[in-house]
Image (cartoon, helix red, strand yellow):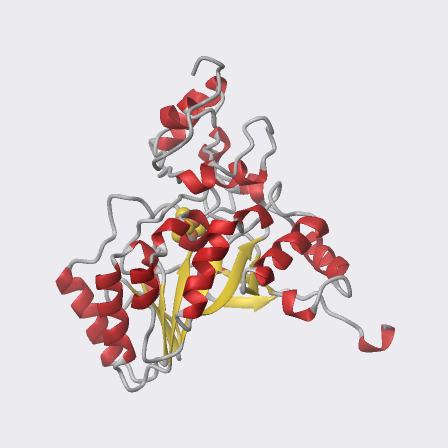
Amino acid sequence: MPDGTPPRVTRTLTSPRALQAAGLLPAAALPGAEAVAARYSIAVTPAVAALIDPADPADPIARQYIPDAAELLTAPHELDDPTADGPFTPVKGVVHRYPDRALLKPLLACPVYCRFCFRREAVGPDGGLLTEPELEAALDWFAATPAVREAILTGGDPLMLSPRRLAAMLGRLAALPQIEILRIHSRVPVAAPGLVTPALAAALETAKPLYLCVHANHAREFTAEAAGALARLARAGVVLLGQSVLLRGVNDSAEALEALFRAMLRARVKPYYLHQLDPAPGTARFAVPVEEGRALLRALRGRVTGLAWPTYVQERPAGGGKVPLGPEWDAKAG
Ligand code: SF4
């Protein structure tokens, strides 16, 4: 560009060079980012790129998605599979950790690749789409497991599937008598809201209640386009919940969390979980100690409506499931 302004991003950026050409990665950071790209996937959608302020070296949106050489340093406590999906996988694509619910991971591709992802060793554009026989085996497992009342589609990002495939999968699950509710975890409504077409919204109109957990970590992710996508989903009868990760440099202040939860509610999304960071490799720069997290939530008490209040949770190691982290209150203390 003659004035040095980077071109507007019109397609998803998947390499450090593409990020640099778009003005989202300084030249000095290129070698480190190339080394990260040899190990982990990168994707920044046009919607996300438009949210980044390249002039701000501490931009909270960039921090979530732009690769950093620090990702190659693995701390002693970090684990390849921090939530231990592996030992709880009865058939490929299924994770059964709790008696009454199970995960179905139909694909491992995402619209964006978050630098703090707990499945970062598994997610990526090349792998993870279940073949038809594998999907059949996974659906057969749900059919043969009457204790499971809730099917949770995650991945990867299930809303990356075509509306036709998604509708077929949800239809099969909803038709099982024991399945009472369906749940999907997705970054799509905020990271690629253009994918939430009327056809996709129609695919989510199921016979059983469907809860969609929207993953977002900063108020700026709730753009007018994202709000439009969420409104389309709400009109299709989808119940919208928010899940966030407490992240250093992204939302580690009471002001940032308040703005995030208020933005969720304005977009019809009820804040559901605030996750403590899972110790995936190379994510230490995002860690916020639990006591600090508790103090942040305490600071929000009385400042925001109870509707804005998520449960602060941590995954226990070795697949032990989630535990709430408080903060605790002394009812008599007022
Ligand atoms: S969208 Fe979810 S699964 Fe995909 S990289 Fe981000 S956190 Fe991981």
